[in-house]
Length: 488
Image 1 (cartoon, helix red, strand yellow):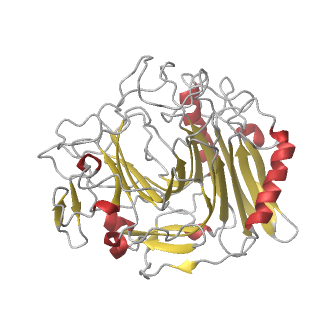
Image 2: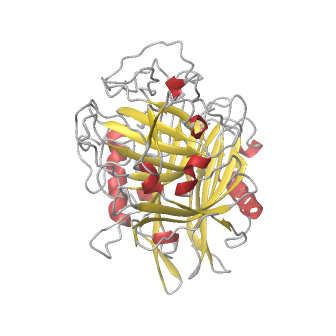
């Protein structure tokens, strides 16, 4: 299997071109980016790379490791000295799985896959950590998630509460017992090639019994290749994600997560690239080229932000019954429609706030920008919701979640976001500079009445796609580079 995956890697690399073989149109509206970077590797320009891998099941847990793969956490971290790559993480470290000890592993986690993965990430973070300032940082994170949900397995809570096995009329994808499995993971540690290019990759499949040597027809597949010229340019991350009929709902993102505390969607300590958490006054800059979109159900996120605060606005503390994960996602796939409309207020946030801080209620049909919102859903543990309301899926995060999904629309132009469908899509590579803090500070998020406004601190910023329950094999392919989060 590994040999065939190597062939795939080489083919994709030739298809996508060399490290510097593409250029991007600048964003139509230039924005001043003078400020301090919130990430350890501003613009992805450091020669010594720090990148890690994590895979999750439907509710952001592990449940069962894939045979022979170890816990689904890995890292590729190295420094460069005299044109030699000095790796910090061994393949033995990457293959660690339940029952195998490492420094710092607790007795409680030794044989529990969910806890083991958490502590393995912290261990890999300790090996990769860069402490050249008062704010240490660890790595960019490749996140892979399987959307299959076996309701009869009893593996996922409901809004943070334990949920025994159940049956439902909702159409969650699952081919049967074992559908929530973890994938295979193949890793090519970064190498310095003869032309001065540094290159490495992660790839694999969810189809554990597949004969990959016969091709990828009807099989799932993921791949992330990173490469950079030694001494110049940005690291370029080339992504590929393929669904299958057995695995029709897959997600692949490159994330900048908090270096300590809870990242978006988690209820335990994580490690990442964000050494300073952005709040309301920050920009996000990156270059993105989409080669394949992933089909009409691919919710491709130009940018996805995650955070966590309680219903009363207090910071999250890991109590999954009262914590609420908050997501804001800009979808740029032009095939994704606005579910929010004057006749479907249930899919709209209660109000919209303009750049000049004017509040527009969703029943103001003359002024509310319905086309700017794909979908809004409220947290399932909220008790004072304005009707009508759609509740978010209660199972796919360890705690309740709230999601605001945006679409290109003229109303977002003030922040540098796309204003028309198709901007930034296939054939339109761009360098984006987004006033993400300005937009995020004006989005609606639920909070209990008469409580002080939450201090919104964004613990995860990522780009990538969620191919949402495709009815045929779909494939997405994209290139990301130059990522930076700039505090102003």
